[in-house]
Structures are given as structure tokens and as C-alpha cells.
Length: 146
Image (cartoon, one colour):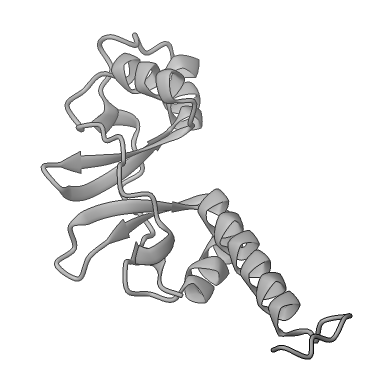
């Protein structure tokens, strides 16, 4: 299965010029701890709740006067939408991350892949496999009219 089949397409973004207060507000509103940082639809970094705390708040940075560009990580690991889900899972495990931005081959941000997306796929696959097995099993009763 390909990443594009599993990823979440609607992704909340933040701009490098937005304040960390705005980033924290978006994270709180949507209940997640990471935001892709984009200029238009180009991924330029990611900011996490931890980045905000460690790189700004702990150093006395004012939330309304400290900008995402000041605390974001610029070296972003990502996957392409046509990568296999197995490749993505290996990358997530190796990097110990729960989410990866997803780009198309024009390097435009098109979604985000989470462990939850991967778990849903595995569950759905398992359910489908179980259903197929049940359908394929011979019936306990025999019907002469079939």
C-alpha cells in the first residue's frame, strides 16, 4: 500500500512568520503536538510543542514576540505520497517519530502520515483478511440447492 492511500490530506499548517503563541493555539485547538511549517505549499520546517517550550519559553521568549522561524526544525524528514507504507513505517521506527510530512514528487506538501493512519490501515487490512477467510470457509451446513 502507498503512503498516499493512508495519509491525512487536510493538514493544519503554520507560517514561519507566525508567532509561537499562534502555533501553540493551533496545537491546543486541534490537540496535536506538531505543525508543518510552510510557505505557500512548500515545506520549510516543522515545529513541535517541545520546540516551543525548550527553544522559547524556557529561555524567556515572549510567546507573542517569538516567531515560528526562531524555534522550528529546518531539517525535516518526510516521505513521498508514492512511497510504500512499509518504507514509511521503517523510517518512522528508525527516527522514532509518530508523524511524517508527505510530499508529492514536485516537493509540495500534500498530507501527513501518522502512526494512527498506519494502525487504521493494518486494522482494516486485518478485518478484510478475516472477512475473506470467513467467506472462503466451507459452510457447516450443506445445501443441496446451491
